[in-house]
Amino acid sequence: MKTFLKEWGVFIVIVALAILSRIFIWQPVLVDGHSMDPTLADRERLIVVRTAPIQRFDIVIANEKDTNGETKQVVKRVIGLPGDTLKFDHDQLTINGKIYNEPYLANFQAQLKDGTLAKTYAAYPPTSELSKSQIDYFVQLAQHAQAFTTDTKGNPVFEVKVPKGKYYLLGDNRVLSRDSRAVGSFSRSDIIGDAKLRIWPLNKISFLN
Image 1 (tube, rainbow, N blue to C red):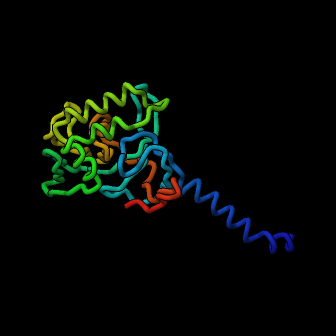
Image 2 (cartoon, rainbow, N blue to C red):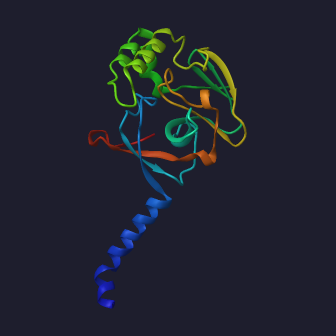
Image 3 (cartoon, one colour):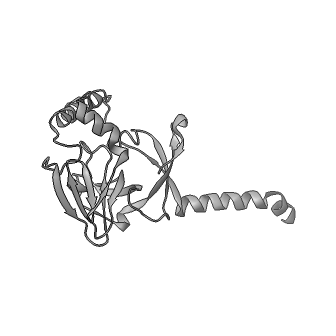
């Protein structure tokens, strides 16, 4: 036994720590869909840290109930913290009376203004989860959107009060993202963790700000 532990003890400890950290600290996640374009693309893979504190503008993974009542994991960005008052006015974000810029939206915001966002949506490849009719619907949304961030009725000016203990999550692809605007704020228990690292594809491995 002593010989075995001497030869294999360090390896066993390393494996055990890796398994425990996988269970309690981190997990891999697959990006499913286009709601975080262009920050994160469909089928990219991330590492999520369960124990990280949740801060404003973090990219997080959360449990959300879909229209069928089933729970699915979604990737979104934290915009509102508990108790915040959010106001959107033609893509200008104000939180508790302070103006914030959202540079991660700049690419698609510019495309919406110059009319090319509809072409970007039209280029999405149909899949088993994304039909041609859905892509056509996305194109129509881009063609008629009054702003990149609107409420569920298409209004470019709206205000939200985030309840205590809740978080307001939005996708970066605001025109088509289904997020807190439609499903409401998320409890802390709904948030699995903070996405820290993109590990796939290999040419895009990077830490996420």
